[in-house]
Image (tube, rainbow, N blue to C red; front, side, top):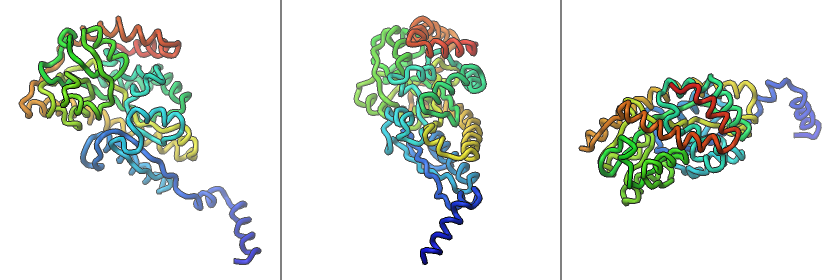
Length: 339
């Protein structure tokens, strides 16, 4: 190509309409990390499926201008490191329990505050309530954008008797899942251990844990029925509700065009119906899984739920509000949604 021809071509590109310049751009490739077993759009842990569904639909709507690679089982970023990596722009996207970052960002622990959310209706109402708007603003200030609000109820697997009332946990070593959950377990007389959900199975198997709280979906995906005898389910209500959203780094989000940002937000919102239905199905499925394995399956009574909630109000809620002004504000807003 002659110098004149090359200069002519480069000049044409520089002065061409924006849509023509965009056509020359390479697709944006975003990496999605999560800690759960991998599968397909049709089969497997619903959280992995949601990531794949989100990726496929977003890619379709952007006509291939935004593409995704999905890394399950913590193969890209370790479980506890995902949220800090998002906040620093070192990771593009993740579906992760927010409470994993509680030590570094104490505000996020409101997403696993015992007894604060006790139903899916209440949890999903957060998104458009004052609490949801303030929480989203706070996360954005930390460099993170919520694409899909995903709530999961959880239960407790035990190597021996089911744990229904607080006094049942006395003398046991239990994984709670957040600083606040650990506080109520200690108040109930248990000792606590901290670890991501993908490490629970091994700890139960080795006898390093007597019991563990985790989401119904994780009880199933990590086959905790094989290493425990009893389960307390979330079918009839729970004091363990976790916010485990699909997140994108604000740095990655800001690199996208306004039209692409709108597509990601729209597809993320559409995934919430699938997430809610899937989580509720897992609440029921975990009971059948343990029953089928010859285990003991029990549900919380209203009386038991109130016991845990009152314990939380006097310990975990107070401790969280005392952390800083942001925490106090978030708790006050969230309490407006408590039934």
